[in-house]
Length: 218
Image (tube, rainbow, N blue to C red; front, side, top):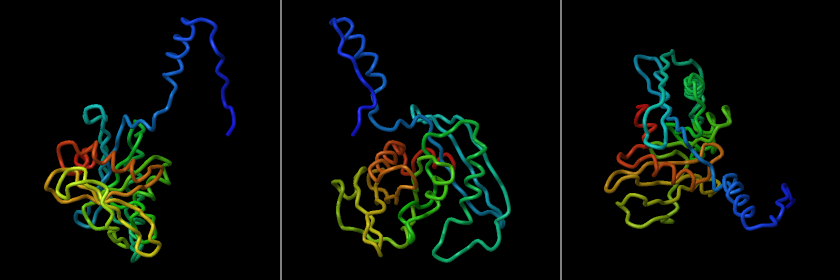
């Protein structure tokens, strides 16, 4: 540890109060995600259709949208290496956003992947932005840990861990965002912890199963 800033002790009560109020505005209590993007990609008639939607996390109103329709790149489908084909188009449509998102919800997997590098990792590392992968499909290369991280299997907020089959590392979570609905499979893409991902997924899925940025994109 090292002293990064010296805070002088005030000489009066009024100056102490004023200084504390000033410094309180600089205290960090965690990352703040004001603008949240969702990016999703689908195939249509041998073409990619990629959509990025930027929302305000205050009320989940849409700030802007971008869409790309393009040909599927040939020769980039490698078995067990999913993400290489999808990531460039997802990145391209995100780069078209005029505003910079604080976090990106990526339709697909992140660390919950056979090589712990799904499409959400590819997007996050390329753009150096916090990302999380969210999908309805079971992540390949993972097994359930059996460790319950919440109560009530059919209730919103119930979580269980996803373990990497080979390394036995906890790489994702199976989480229910709504009561009595199927779970989502969520994992970090870049610069987020497992708990960050769980909290973000729940916060963004107040009314629907899918987090709002991805629901709007899809």
